[in-house]
Amino acid sequence: GENVEQHPSTLSVQEGDSAVIKCTYSDSASNYFPWYKQELGKRPQLIIDIRSNVGEKKDQRIAVTLNKTAKHFSLHITETQPEDSAVYFCAASISYRTGGGNKLTFGTGTQLKVEL
Amino acid sequence: NAGVTQTPKFQVLKTGQSMTLQCAQDMNHEYMSWYRQDPGMGLRLIHYSVGAGITDQGEVPNGYNVSRSTTEDFPLRLLSAAPSQTSVYFCASRLDSTHEQYFGPGTRLTVT
Image (cartoon, rainbow over all chains, first blue to last red; front, top):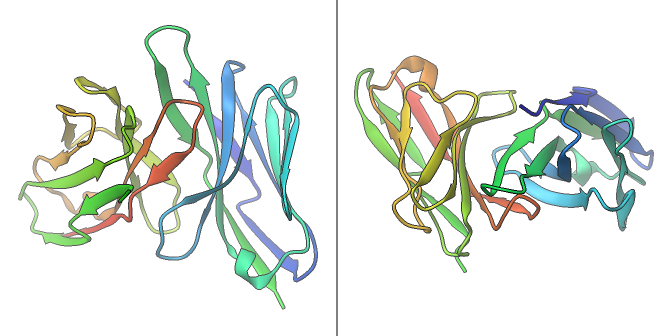
């Protein structure tokens, strides 16, 4: 089955700096890669996603890049703010041609702390 | 739309008791899943479903049962609660495998 590895497990940056979180996946058939943000005591919420037919996607201060050859994708947050402090999860999903799709496999999470 | 709803929000059980965590969604999503999240840990998949009448095991299925009789509901049953099942449980749903997965607010379960 799919295996998703995420690094680093913790990341501390100064306000205004950039943060980068990296994930690798094992199954080359994976074609959907979302990123979730989870604030303390709350549910995970989608912040950005990318499908395998594009290499990069940007939404204001957040961007995701995908390298299908190397089987890795990254989350980039620019001009970090204290409210960006949270746990971030990457995930990967596969669409099978028959029998429907399957499960969304998550990375282990990155605790991002933005310091003033 | 209410999105994904879960009940109860909090629950305390004694070892050996059974209970059902309820999950419902009103977005007509085919895919539904149950995860558990332990303190400082990631999301571990318990069971998932790709449509009514279809369920499959995730990475930590032991001690849990599911059924999917309707598109809207996906209850999770704890057969005989154990302290190791103390966790936060999230239900989630999505339209298909390439669309956003929405999470419910979670159920915090403590087994004593």
